[in-house]
Length: 219
Image 1 (cartoon, rainbow, N blue to C red):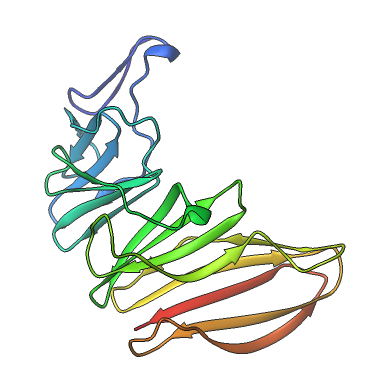
Image 2 (image 1 turned 90 degrees about the horizontal axis):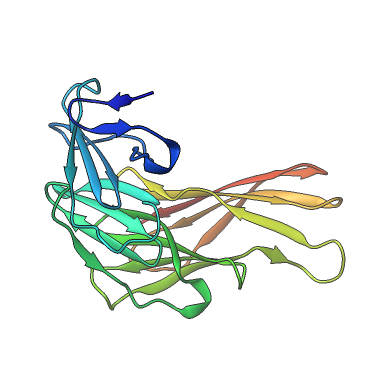
């Protein structure tokens, strides 16, 4: 069968020939946009879509994150990010980060004049948050580090990072930590002023259950 995603956009005649959006729509203030490697879909009403060919060629990975910041669309693509004003023509940038936290850039945000990205290395089992004043190749500083496994002996605590987000002033993310037995402490961590150090506030203690933490970067 032949199916269609929007006006003049997706035509599918078999599974191997499918060209379909893989991300949720992003609102830019005037239109909705979906970005894949090679294609961009644009709509004003979420019903009628037009597909365009973009210049994200030779990209082997899906778009991990997409944001509309400072009148530009910013996406993360595995070990790089890309910037565009129309979703069709892109400038690609590969940031130089500590090798223990690359090459999987999963989140990117902007707040208080700083860019923050979250990057993960599955081999090392580490997640890092990096800060920079501009979207450039260099200038990235590691401001937070999370190891997937912490503690010595058995059992160790398993930590899982949750999405990095911001309201433009305060940046926050979640961490799920668990073990088979033992005590957990819920904490909120916050950055204030111009420093990159976290202050920690204990909230509650729970036994034998998931630990949900919220980390706040309030600069």
